[in-house]
Image (cartoon, rainbow over all chains, first blue to last red; front, side):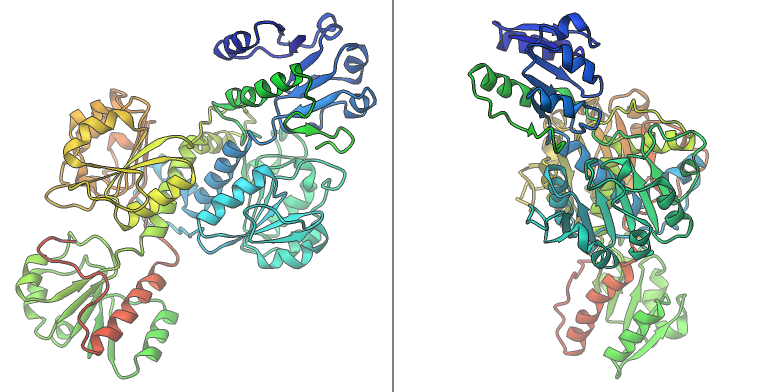
Length: 314
Length: 314
């Protein structure tokens, strides 16, 4: 098999792969090149570099392994037509992302931005207004692998978790479930709203002005999924009108967030530059998913871990 | 009984108390006054306002309820001689303190200070160097009520916990135990060192230069106990020599930390102004301990919750 990486992994990870699969041919290139596309049986990509044209000329391509969770930049329609298998690394984000969500939430409750500010001024000031996370209620939009890990950690901190998905189908580490349709009923009862929803037709602009109006004015809204969950102006208005207390966003409708955007200077939002999944162990974890999948594939077993339905996008 | 508060609690908490104990006399004053000391049977204090002279003139005093955990500013010798019962609110700090420790630790791993800095500059920069907390090993110096809660949360995050006390006696939420005497052997094996030790003869300057030299150069040292655990200059040298990667301190040998102290500007230490136990629910929780204790006391039951041995100081 010809296995084409459109990025160049760390030497130790490459060596490891070559050692484990000595009979396969590997290409590691930091770009998408036609000559390699034409011969590749398997493509390994971060999922942001492929076009419909690439798929058309990739005559041998049978499987695309995406070492990312978001697939919205993939030409999925064309991939579906060609009947190419797509798998991703859903799940490897769960540890770093859940740790990031907990870090931001606890930092907010325990006054860390305030402490850092006093530190910059060399000011010993003990008038912190710290709150506790314990005994809060959190709504998790998208209680899948990542949402479940966030739910598990929240429960450890004594937080009640409500999962929210389309169907209301039970999910791990959620004390109870609700549906997108019932959001307006549930929002007034929760202290923290955390979205890790992917971008799909159903989640695009799912949250409207009325949803923010329905939230407690003490609510914390965290978007760690995709920026198109809410129109930027709706979120901005909700924050300016203090319909909620605070927002912590790792994703935005427009990324990079433009330098002149008001979010940068507003004091009731934390802007995180889409880094919550970053981890020094990211590729190592991706390879832990890729290698068993590759072994299966070579054995003719097409039941890979984390197969994506290209029509649904997840 | 005459119950003298040397501080003035929130109105709702006072009302609640007066309603629950209509037959008792309460004095709420924001200071220590001789005329009240002379008649008080029970004293409720934050524990920083009493002198030996106060104890001498408090003729009727039988019980001092300290709504704090640290007792080092109490005239304990004199209190012991007079055979006055002392109780504190040990345990109510555990939720806010454990949340603060986790907040600081996760913030460090997940690059929050870096994210905040980029935000101040309106800079969309995705080159974060985030790490994961998972699979670390933490040494908890003082695995009591607070240390146990920290241990419980660390275990939720997949961190291995090693408790360290004088005897090596088993403690909750510690995967294994070690002793003060074995510190030099254990320190090279751990990634995170967290102290919540009280200030006692045994813990005073317990950590020496050799201990910091024994730590991994990637280690994070967190002092959330008392500042005299380590001489300031020893910690400073360890940080300047990069014998450890980072320190997060909520307590210091000299408090307030002097404004010209190098710690304020060093980039491998976070200075927190002794606020980790702060919580909007602090007094509410204190009253939840005080009220059942008062009920016991009025019934002649002297087996109060959280009784302190004034000779030991804990």
